[in-house]
Structures are given as structure tokens and as C-alpha cells.
Length: 128
Image (cartoon, rainbow, N blue to C red; front, side, top):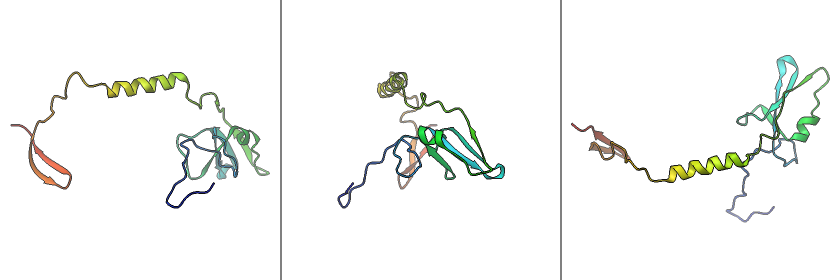
């Protein structure tokens, strides 16, 4: 892919497999427990850790460990990885609800008297 000067390539928000030249979506996380000589392959971690590796379904299933090491495989639910229509509908409903104007304005809107300013901050005195 060739980029023009001053442009940035689009980055996918999905986590990808850590294996070189693999662009598939990650479904599992590999973590090494050096003290126990164990490699643990489990569900995709909530966020990327610096000392763990995200793996696609194929690479998670084919993983082997060095001689003398044990591989522990925890159940990985690959069906629950992608959002389903219920998730998307719930998200759309939440956005619609947040965008709907409130029937009751906030009780303390406009309360307080400005007594000072510092940059973009304001100091308000409570109503007496």
C-alpha cells in the first residue's frame, strides 16, 4: 500500500492476530507462565497486554510449546466474539435515548455566580 505524504493509513479497531503476516481477527490470548513452564491459551483478554499475544482461531488451535513445557487451553467461545443483532439494537436504542431532549431540565442549571476565572475554568459561588 502506498501512502501520499501527509496521509495516514486507516487502522482497524479490531484486534488482529499477533502472528507475522496473519491479518485475521484475534479470538484468543496467549500468555506464558515462565515459572511453571506453561503456555496458556484462553479467551481474548479485555485489553492488549504487553507480554501476551492475541491469536486467531487457527493459530490458537495449532499452538505448540517448547519441549518440557505444558500448553493449557481454556475454552474460547468464538461465537460470542462478534456482536449480534440484539447488541446492535441495544446500542442504537441507547444512542436514541441519549439524543432525546430531556423533559425536565437539570435543577441546578444556571445556579451560582461567577466569582473568578483561570484559563478555561470558572469559580462559582453557591447561591445564598
